Length: 361
Ligand code: FE
Image 1 (cartoon, rainbow, N blue to C red):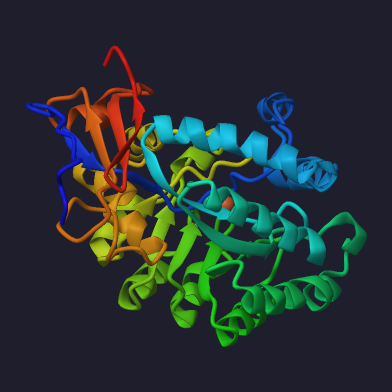
Image 2: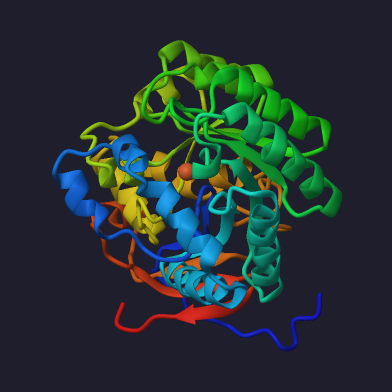
């Protein structure tokens, strides 16, 4: 290796970490939904807001109406702030177009952002919600949009993963299984939004289909969690979403360590839950879900790498892996979860290159 042009950085007595891997985001969208906070505070649930044409459906309208350039510029700003908070790899889902051409357009926009240098793992989530024009006709939506989007996506290699939002009011178990089986046949890897608001048996289905990760899991049964562990399915917990949805409850993180089911953490950044900082997610994982500092940091790094099938190339500081490195202003790893909503970083490196330097840390 030629190191003649290498630069030296003094990190003495500073906590150094692998870059955070945000393994579950909906970061590609247009617009904002700040008005929904007041609705949530008035006691309206996520599903009620959706039924009134808000929620995902509003973001679908905004995203469909936005040009590629606008989508890219709004998303770039978010990704840049996430990098400043230590995220060096992003999983990003489609799912705010909900028609064939639109979903493919979103994945093409992600490819363009990737070509600009953002390290993005793209996921097809055409099964995110039933759009208004298919209201009450979910099976027609699956036939006419979801299945063709998988076929096109696999052919054009636009996404690594296929994901489904399995929930009452979204996609049921039989539809979810059909969609994911179809994606697996087309060579895509699988993910599942499971048991976020109710226990529909999503964790069990995730184990049965041996998906790479099942995500959300706030209401999963103990048996489902154990089944996931047996099949090496990673549980991606998203405590920020619980926090911002005002549900007052979190996933049962202890059940995962008892069952031997690995846990990864992510922001779930979306217009419903605008969280750009993995450091803040680590805070809520400890203060809200009562994970240990060690579990939370592993969840944001190596386990998150495995949740997007990147475990062999990132997620830890090891010879042969990408040098995605965070240099903090902290002296030990316990300070990181302890300090709430701080940005504790001094430097962010991506593949050995300094991409962010933050002052006054
Ligand atoms: Fe999500």
